[in-house]
Amino acid sequence: MAGPTRAPRFGIWAAVHGSRASHHDPDEPDDASWARNRALVLEAEALGFDSVLVAQHTMNPYDGERDQLEAWTAAAALAALTRRIEIIAAIKPGLYHPVVLAKMALQIEHVSGGRFALNLVNAWNRAEFERAGLPFPAHDDRYAYGREWIGLVDRLMRGERVTFAGAHFQVEDYQLRPAGTFRPRPTIYLGGESEPARALAADHADVWFLNGQPLPDVAALIADVARRPASNGPLRFGLSAFVIARETDAEAVAEHARLLTLAQRDAGLRADTRARTDRASAMFAKTDAGAARHVGTNGGTAAGLVGSYATVAERIRAFYAAGIDLFMLQFQPFEAEMRRFAEQVLPRVR
Ligand SMILES: Cc1cc2nc3c(=O)[nH]c(=O)nc-3n(C[C@H](O)[C@H](O)[C@H](O)COP(=O)(O)O)c2cc1C
Image (cartoon, rainbow, N blue to C red; front, side, top):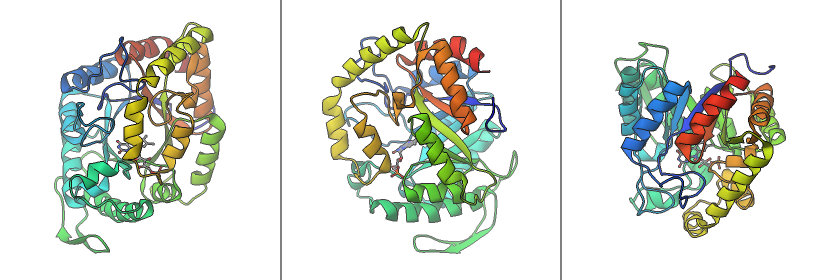
């Protein structure tokens, strides 16, 4: 395979708020519990997955009555339980002071023995902030805040002695220890597709996460960001995708149709969620347009990983050739389909 210099890696989205395609699936109880996530991640590691992404939401973004796994405390516990898998916790800068968050990241880096990463996400759920009395500035202002925030977190995670006076933060003579034990600092991912997200990815991230979408769109986004000077060496690229793999293309398409039908029962939840969403978030223009044709969050099946085992493997190879070296995957029912992917698709790609 042409493409990135690293071998392709495969990760799973933790079930932080339950099911990804539909919350009304008789084959998958909507379960966001710690017990379920603990077992899920341990099994993913045993099956050979390389990474787990623990999305951050303080309250369930679809329905406040439903359970929600807390990302950072769960990431710390997963770090202690696992041995090999990378653990990525998402973080919205507006929720934590950068000094406190950098310290938390370094602690999980130590618990995991150098396997921790954070995924900077800029927030879209207005209610998560406003109901807590926290400021929720306009889209680009949130990115300006996030830029100052991640600059500080980066330096603090490296163990630098930091004195800083900016528009949002004043830090004087702060240094975190221990730092740099396993590598210069934990890995920084960034998820978001608007122009300020792209600029911030080039300036501060190691890996830029794209939402699931067709290959030509992915290739165009990569070309746009890869041409920018990158501060942390060549930027790498990750793709979110929902996988439906079967013996034949027809069986996979039929399963997609089943999930699309179930997803219609979530129409009310989706409408409530959209009412709380910052309409300026770039990802929602895209995902809303495809809601009737795709399942899963963050693009889901729009990436086209729906088909026979051979078809899905071939499409993964094509994304890899275009520059994607980490595939962050969703399934439903999660455990059974994750196993199937590990047995049937991974050997065809690796
Ligand atoms: C791979 C990936 C993971 C994300 N994880 C989260 C998350 O954990 N919590 C969250 O609120 N938003 C998450 N987001 C959504 C981003 O916050 C969203 O893209 C951003 O708010 C909108 O920024 P944009 O307008 O630059 O796209 C994620 C996005 C991507 C691509």
